[in-house]
Length: 430
Image (cartoon, rainbow, N blue to C red; front, side, top):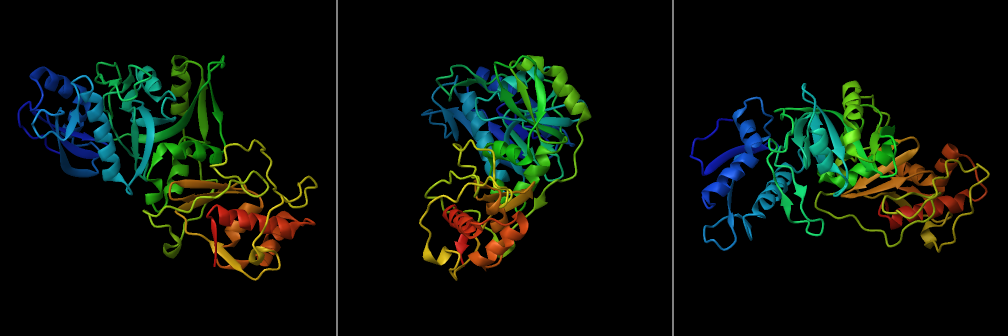
């Protein structure tokens, strides 16, 4: 993309794979110069023909102060708060421009000299900014905020000024130094994902380590830090490929991130993708949940891990699922009032409710319906998989017994699983 020459008041940028034009004419000269410096990496990307560009139509942002009468579209109450307001607005608009086209992660990313990037995922306040600032002293700076990931593994860099907390009690007031001022390494114009780590800071840890995590556990840790994943036809499958980009899913466990330079560098150097260990279970067009439709919420949460384990059930601490109906240890089915047509002898049929994407791995199924994931295990997983076409509870019981083994109360267990899945919006009456 050619850089327009329009004087110091207008700055052309590329970030998040999108073109932008900043109009700084409403700012005092010194403030405008500081703003240009903050976004200097993105101006360099606009001038580099090798920069990954997804949307080349520039979006104009006029930057100013509230009530200054200039018609500014990005405003703050004072010049000190304006840099963070602008940073947030570009990120917000970028997420909207790219929705349904790419995987969007609330994450940091740093790259080696070859442009191979490690993505660092954590919730807000989970250490991404600190990890970026510290590890970015020796690695290239891709982003501290949003990873724009294409299906082929390329990343559109977002080298915005890193956002640094000033007062933990005031989340909307952050310092925004330029990446150069922060001492961060160079930004590659078109990096690729080589590894993904979730961050687990623990002050009690005496030796930093990278430890393996189960695929479904990792996906459930990363999903809350994504945006509009359900807009993609294969959003969950793409995310599974991302978390295994460098090998088995893993997390970085540490007390202080400045002890992790060599650990992360070695992990990045050795990272290599693995063949998928999961089965992709996408919906057919007629089964897909519309992008703008909110799935029904569960009126109650299952506390019985025999039936299903839901991602919104954060209270269950029992790791044992009913993998087999004849394991000799399975508890009796919980007492519950079943609708007559869902009792074992009932004739009603059930079928999967619309969903956005799903994968199966190690006997579990992770279903994404809109923004809501549901983790299924044991009979719940078997039932959901068997209900792609309308089916009775009796037929489902036969399938569950064939896969998991017999149980004296198999009919009641399966009926309870069906009722739970209906309650959670994963099944519906046909």
